[in-house]
Image 1 (tube, rainbow, N blue to C red):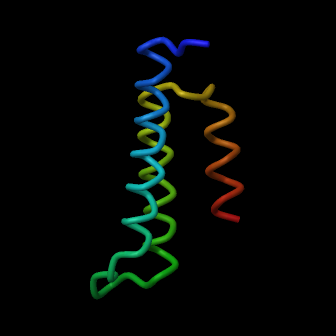
Image 2: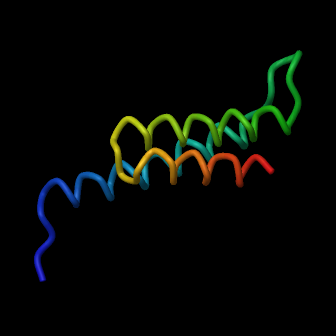
Length: 70
């Protein structure tokens, strides 16, 4: 079984998006923000990257983001 280059690239970008979201969520929040807002920002950044690359259909990305926020 061989994976195409576009599929491999989407997998790598998905991993990067999740790691970027986790890193942002664990950063020390600036003065007006708190830990919960940094978590929301990390989830949103992950969603934006996944939507730009179109790894999943948009409606699934929206449902994942809303579920993670809840």
